[in-house]
Length: 152
Image (tube, rainbow, N blue to C red; front, side):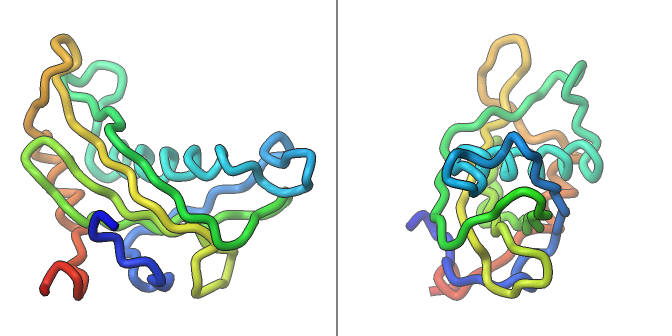
């Protein structure tokens, strides 16, 4: 499955971000709707890129665009609850990165959802692939994990 090692635990993610749910996140069934999980992915990734990698989302010459994403749901969230999003990097290329994300209930070791998200970095104007900016790459390198599958 694209190298994602499902069944990871909280400690397998070197970066974490607490994201409060909102009343509007709940659907008619009383739980956070599945589309919001992708917003949690986007939030933990982009907050990391901006805060840790210095990505300038407004004026930078290079931007990241989503090329692929996936989520496997195991348990639900509901408002009011805080989602703890764990982030790691499964693969870091010249112009792309595959993030692996775990979404956890506060204090839980097992994720309620796991997935991946692929960013391709492109030139803002031409939209052609571009090298990941050096400060962003340095931040992402701190999140690279090597799983048993990758070693095999």
